[in-house]
Length: 382
Image 1 (tube, rainbow, N blue to C red):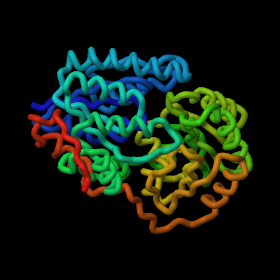
Image 2: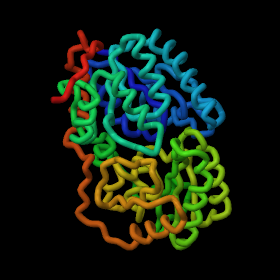
Image 3: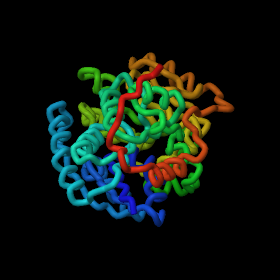
Image 4: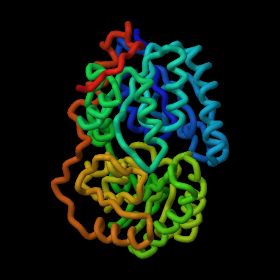
């Protein structure tokens, strides 16, 4: 049996991987291994490893790496701790293949360590562009250390090949998050409100997620205050905040959001993690998604609601017509909010939608020859 080791470090990426993990788990020819790391193991970020276990998965290893600070120094040291933890994990588990998704620094640790162990890596969501974050460089670095590639669009497949990867190893399968929307049984609105401790959503609410823009210097506080100030101009809208990831300067955003929620408890709530089912259910009834999360661009359009994408964090991503971009100033955000909340969006075409995303990935994981996979040649485009 092939041992397929899935590494997950955040709530969002686990939600995207969970369907594939289940498919690997139930396949008689595969053995699923799970490594949980980074935010999953942090009380500050909701100890979301529990969600993995509640979904019926066994966590084979926990790699503790997150320092309780969001400075550049602490982030770099966390990456170093990840190297040491993943070395021990791979030594014990001896996986035949490591599966990762995305572009976060804990995944950089996981993939870099796999390189030294000569373990093939399968990477999801490569070839994408996010010019405002250092995740952009991390993503391309992961691509160069990976051996099988599953992209979310044909344009991104072309870009992975442009990076020198063999076209025979690069597969356009669509985004797994879109498939989740079709397969996960969503809550009724009353069930959703009950799960939010009885918070009444009413007929108008927005989901707000704002992360630091990691290639900018000390902009997090000003930008989140501009956003909160703009949201004050829409007092008839309820707000569900999902808190940012463990990126540099993320904690100032968390502090300011928590202070805002405490002051506006009648119309705002905040969670470190909603979990996959509750998050998708919240999107189903929302009027709009607001912030700078990749989910606003990749998954939200499939619900037929608009996204206000603020600033440069996601700059360069393909986007549906329902994604409205704006600057980070308060007036820019107000103009954007006016557009997404007062424009009707119909017949939205989501460029990230695939046909059989999980099945296509699973087939490659099962059948692609392992012999010689670790060796790569640079593919020169004609």
